[in-house]
Image (cartoon, rainbow, N blue to C red; front, side):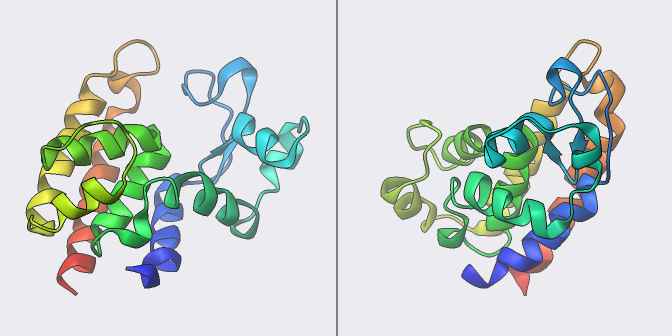
Length: 178
């Protein structure tokens, strides 16, 4: 489990892409930009000051890795999750918020959906087949994406979200079976 951080970050960055300043991207509020999946707002919070598009454009994996580890990987307790499920829960947390992916996982294993993965969630999770949980997480994630409406919703970004969800399930299953 703990050995999956580097691999998971690499897989995540494959799907996050490069610099964008798409006004319809819900993560880019107030004319912000995104690079390597990190929004300008998140990066500004991380560095404690305002940044411009040039700084965002210059971000590297070394710049964003610590943000992903602190704000997403650790928040979903990925080091404590089964292999594959660690990556999938982390990635969905990056894409839609750690509470969203944690609540989905908790709903699948029928524990209180409080968005915080703790000892009770982990104990209950140990009773489930990780591959079945992954497949159900994929389906819940797809339903979540399809439920996002409006100009920055599924109609505009759904093809990419669906492809990402499918690709990440495939990679997570390889990790789980490996």
